[in-house]
Length: 299
Image (cartoon, rainbow, N blue to C red; front, side, top):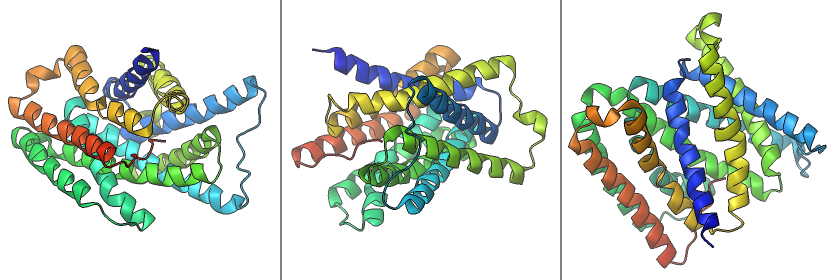
């Protein structure tokens, strides 16, 4: 009876591990995402070969347009991941995840704009509730504000990506196929970003320990986590899944405290600010449930 719930929170824990791996890997953010997306795309190809299936081709009525849109979603995803890992490297896992907790509220603003629907005032009010939490976090960590800005940029891009992803899924593109094209788009984005940054080729080659963590990141936290999430949605409503995923920052901050002892560097105002943001997320989900509206799934 409780097994699906345990599996759901296992998924959230796996997602939280992503931030820990970002701290353990010494590669620059563009190179890190370049390896992550490249290995994930290769893993998907190998997995389909093992299963003897050929489902990595888009076969919708408007193949060209949908292919470009899938690659475009990958560009957004690549930029999101670069900002995410850049935030961790510029500040800490805890500050990055606190900033990422604003994703659902950016979604409340971006989704109506993209879908040309009416903005819900309850979402806007709850979004405003996040501001005091951010001010409390910035107040203690002023010297790490660049990392928090990167986290907020990552959260904003993460709010755009699911809306695009949901549209493409509703057009009949299988999740594995969509993931493959998005990995390609993200890979190309990171490759171009690396060229503009003028990184030396040596900076892109991982050490032995980096390569091990990259395999875990690409295999466990990307390909497996995505397919695992899709499978779990058979047992849960989108509301229940999103409510659990809102606790990713909690698990991530706890892991950062256990592994990197980041709690020794954090002021009580950080925890108060993070708690404010997380509670606003939970209240947002509860109000949506009472209003009879389902939150869109994280695809």
